Image (cartoon, rainbow, N blue to C red; front, side, top):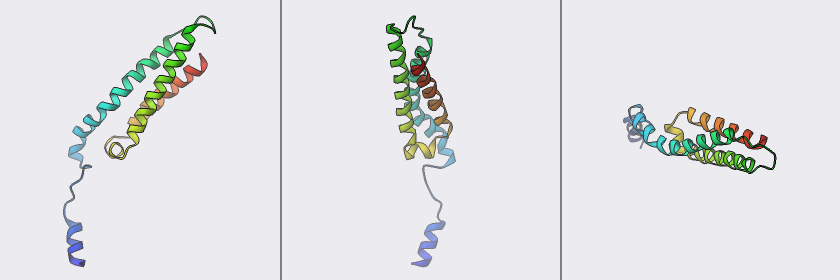
Length: 112
């Protein structure tokens, strides 16, 4: 079994992680993340743009809801990004955008 095992280990390995396949695979896997992050950015923007007149204004609750919705979408995108297929293919920068968006939306929801 020794020579067979050594010969098997020396064969070229075919895998999903090949560099020439990375571009197309990143584009395909990035689509669901972009579909989640675009509404997250929009709801974060709406939460930041809403200016309630008083503490009892309905816009205050709306800003809190939009901030929470943005955080939810970002956490959902992060859960997708954590899966092994995404971690092997996508770069670490896909973690930076949702964390920044979620932190901004959370801060706005807490300070309205």
